[in-house]
Amino acid sequence: MAFNKSPRVADARAVARKWKKDQVIILGIDQGKGTIEYASYGATSYLCADAKLKADAAFEAIVHQQINSE
Image (tube, rainbow, N blue to C red; front, side, top):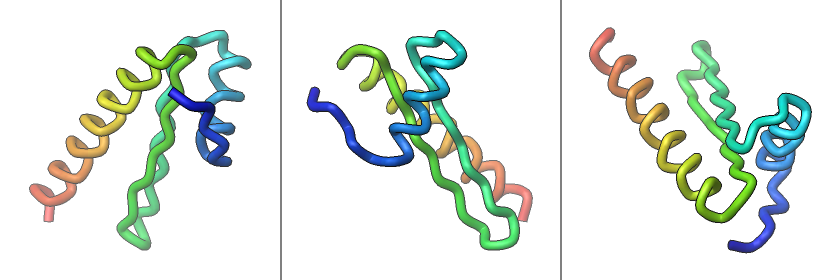
């Protein structure tokens, strides 16, 4: 897996280093705009892919929760 230069992934990478974690998922929610975004990071290609799967699941759970609460 290639190095991801995305600024959001860089933020997740920085948190991983600061917190000494090998995976990080950052969820950004703007209730007013109704938007949800995320960035994920894994220290290896396997952990990166795994973090993305977990981030996707968290994203879907939040979207599902929002739909059911409307």
